Length: 160
Image (cartoon, rainbow, N blue to C red; front, side, top):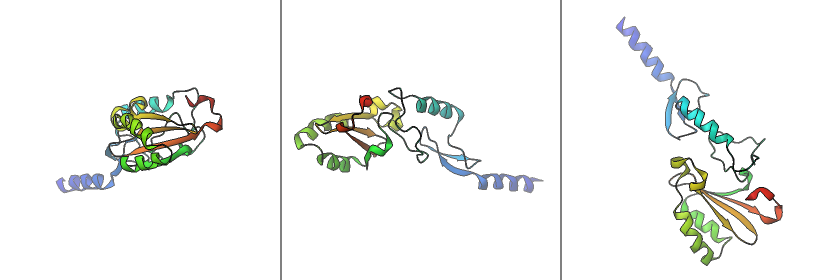
């Protein structure tokens, strides 16, 4: 009888699937392939957050995005021009900004708190303005940043 119970336990452990929670980004073990959250409260909190945008529209509405992508509620994901570490971000920003302006913007970028920690876009993003572009820097995690760029000529009234 004991051997049979042990076999059942081993079968259960072998069938668990390694997944990453969409809300907290932690690894968990799921029974189903379709699991997205490590617990029910994270599912509820994620769905509340996903429905909240700064404006009355969702810029990514109707688009199919890869599961697990942390999106900017202000700018469509197709405006993403960079995703990577901080040093690479600064090199990318130098393509659009002068060294003097980048020096001033670094002050705000250095203060950003990772979204994976605070779950608050206002503390995880910085806006950068030039004569030609509106840009937004998002700190996704400790090491990962995203840069979105939108032209002023696109006449987007809801950019702010």
